[in-house]
Image 1: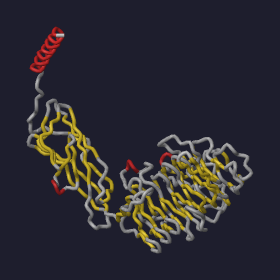
Image 2: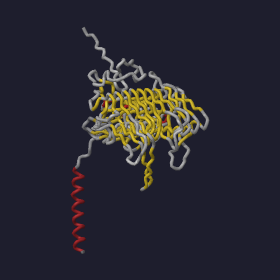
Image 3: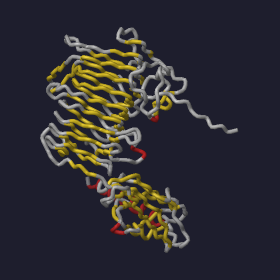
Image 4: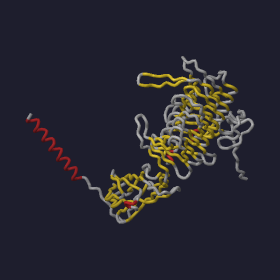
Length: 492
């Protein structure tokens, strides 16, 4: 044992001598003090898209290069606006408005991360918030501009807590009529709730933005009226407005509408990038109301575009596209009529297994190991002049519960369908399994190519103009868009 310990001591002594020799032989890296030395940057400016006041931005990065052979010390990296600046920088894990003595090796680089928070200005118009990051190196200065567009907003913050529910705020108490005007955006954190027997009216051009996991809930006996227009649609989307977030799903939760004795209506809306576009369901029993949705787009939902449980919906001129599950999930029976609508699914964020249309007379509620089957009559499910097309072999699932004796009425009249079941007697004058030739579905452009097989295959439905406001012909094209010839410029 003594000899072993003696041997280990000798080995460590030898290693120490060797390391000492190598350390003494290693050349110290030379630092340049040349005042003409310049840094290089990955960008000459950092630009933030619209940032809502008080909420903060995504983090942008700036790469700083030392393209010289010798190392350099940046004596100071600072925000020109100092402590009053709405920006903050992070260098080597340290965050603030000024950093000192930052070293960059020869032909090396560092990253700087930048965020901005805009203070409220009580101004309805967007504001430009500027600053710059200043670099002082060997007595010379360089800077990179910082530019953000800030926007004040109406903030609706869910502060009420109730077991089993997300945080929420009641925006219309029982019997009240809330009215949102188009002055500045509405930012919802948590759930905005229209209480029983209350209503919410939303004017054309309103912009409603939801924080992660947030939504809008129209409680039973409540109603909603969305009064968008062709020129000024009402937008429902997340709070991130940067280009990289424009088509990303699951940025917020859903619009949730319960049963009522008052009809609800949504006109000219764009609902995008959530988990479920619209969830319409009865909590106990139907009260006779109808949800009408006209001239609306529902795009990029992680789950369903529209999900129902025993509801009554009429939809016209709709584009519902790119959902992680079914685009239309109509369950527990109900009554539905859709005209002149395009239902397309090429969801690219995960593997999709569910068809575009799931039409069922039941819904299964799971509670632990138990399950409860709820069922109802499918009084009507009519589809006229519609397109159902996606990248699955079968995009239509007619799902009748085997033990039910419910009514199950449906029909497809002058539609294009991608389905394996082409001999169904409820299909009238339909076109099967032909590519409708969308212009560019990868970019959510579901207009029709000039060679589309669905041109002039429709019948008049009473909706004389398409989703773009284009006049339909006497034999309209199927789907939400009428083909329009491209004007070719005369270059002679």
